[in-house]
Length: 483
Ligand SMILES: Cc1cc2nc3c(=O)[nH]c(=O)nc-3n(C[C@H](O)[C@H](O)[C@H](O)COP(=O)(O)OP(=O)(O)OC[C@H]3O[C@@H](n4cnc5c(N)ncnc54)[C@H](O)[C@@H]3O)c2cc1C
Image (cartoon, rainbow, N blue to C red; front, side, top):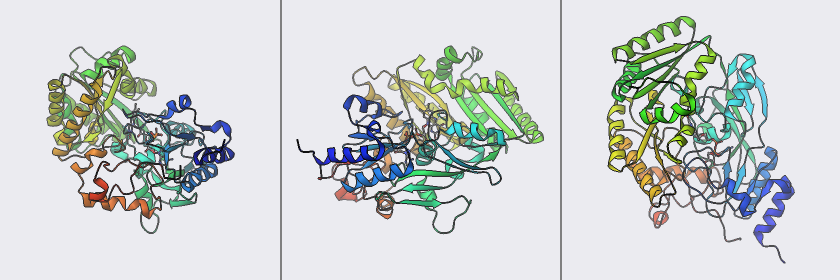
């Protein structure tokens, strides 16, 4: 039997990474067909390189035969970014988990892309340091995935998101060459290609090493939980806190549906009248923590808080956070599936938009939970549903689209932190003109990707769009006529 071109590619990939790390049997590929979103598609094959050199070689081999690759970290993405598209090979970074170097004096670490976010902070804790961006998925997601999505997290309100904490990265390009964008210094001369790569959702190359900033652990941390009898009171408190000149390290909100979901698993014992919970954290020097927390408590009391607790004790603080950090998993207590919409609105529009989100839920008879980074105005309405009911997924996606439009109409954005991926590409025209998208799409050829990475993502695809707009030109599906 003659080997076709794809089988020859598999043979060469096995030569690089070893038989065990090239997955191509359909039953084994199922593990890689999805991420945390609702989209699914099988890759043609999956490669799990053991070194960054192996990774670059695999990229080059795929490129040589015109097969596009889809980078994958831990697969926790919520916009379908790591979901394969037709004919693609997935390259997974889960074996690249070394913390290569920690320079405590300059507060810099160099890590491989598969390093799990939380593991970095654990590794440098004894040096009095930590890595700030803390997505709620931080015990599972990779730093490479964080870079690709420009991930945020509860503690990004005061300190900034991933782009503020990554000084540079080594990237494998389509031909297998590796280049550094930025470096270990905070500022690099020339164009900020580091900034371009961060948030590029795996479309420009694969990050193989990442230089991150570490921060000193704060002298004191205080966590406060404020429970309100209405969402309006909680939303107003959020606006008042920020307007009052306090920027807490974290300012998170959960609504009644979320409270119902977390109660049986985490037993936070919120009072019966609870309709909204704020989790607020301040950190820094002792005096400033005392001042800020006193101001926050007063504002919450002015807004009629029903119960209020604060703690500086690390064990109790972890308990106060547990329900928020585990909220998305706890939705399984209410429904088997969730679809999380990641829109952003100006903070002052929180009340208005949340009320309209509730109206959409009521009109469409859908259960919607809200658990989100309130301080950033980053909404996360989670539509809870059961995908086994015929037509339910389509209804949920329709409701999600309506919520995104609401956010944009309120002066917000399509994504706060989860990216566009497959999930929101159709909504790009709500905020970008064809000219905008054509300009953005020119970055692909500038990185010489020749559509080699994560095709058919981010930009809208569909009949006629290439001819009419040009921006989907480099965003086609991943096979070439070689195979
Ligand atoms: C329960 C839960 C809570 C979450 N909370 C948050 C939150 O608070 N904040 C937040 O921002 N996100 C959150 N997320 C979303 C998700 O965890 C983040 O987007 C995270 O950054 C994805 O990392 P990953 O390793 O899982 O990436 P994947 O899902 O594997 O990939 C995500 C994207 O990155 C690309 N990619 C992966 N690795 C690389 C690489 N080395 N080089 C180039 N491209 C690469 C992929 O192609 C894809 O486009 C949450 C998800 C879940 C399930």
